[in-house]
Image: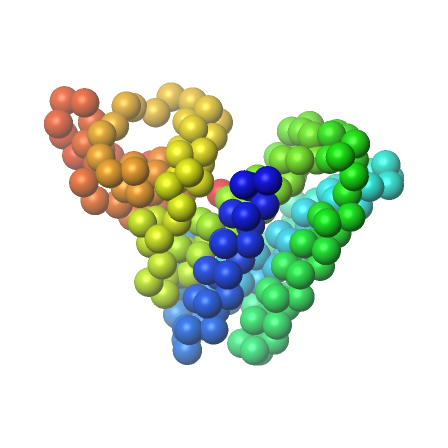
Length: 206
Ligand code: ZN
C-alpha cells in the first residue's frame, strides 16, 4: 500500500529532522509552537491513532483522545521532556503504531472508527491520517525540509484531500510543492490565482 510507504518515508524525515536539530526550543513553522510542541504532538498522534487501530482490531470503542482538553494538557506535559527523551518517544510511538498496523487483517482495516473530528471512516484511513501528520510536520519542524522534499504522489493526494475538506478555495496555479503548501496554510512562493495575482495565505491546516 503506497500510503503505508508514505508513513515510513514521513517518519524517516521527521526522525532526521529531530536528530539534526540542536535547538528543540526553536520556533517551528506553526504559530506559537516550538519544535518541542511539534515533536510531542507527533508522538501523541501516533498513540492516539494506535487507539483507533485497537478499536479496529478488537471492536472495543477507543477514541483518539479522551477529550479536546486532555489533548492540549498532554502536549503541554510532553514538551517538558528532555530533547533526547522527546526523540526516543517519537521513535517508540512510531514503532508501536507501525507494529499495531501490521497486525490488522483485511477485514479489520474495513471496520469503522471515528476520527478526532468526529468523522466515521474505515480503519484504512488511519494510515492516510498518519502519513499526513508525519509528512507535513516534518516540514513544520523548520529544520530545512520543504514541501519539495515530499513525494509528488503524496502532494497530489494531499492537495485533493484539503480541497475536498476545506471547501471554498480559489483555483490557483504554481509548482505542485508550492500549491500544496498554500492549500495546507504553510509558507509558499510562486502561487497565483487564475487572474495572475499572488494567492492570499490560508490559515494552517492540521
Ligand atoms: Zn498534527
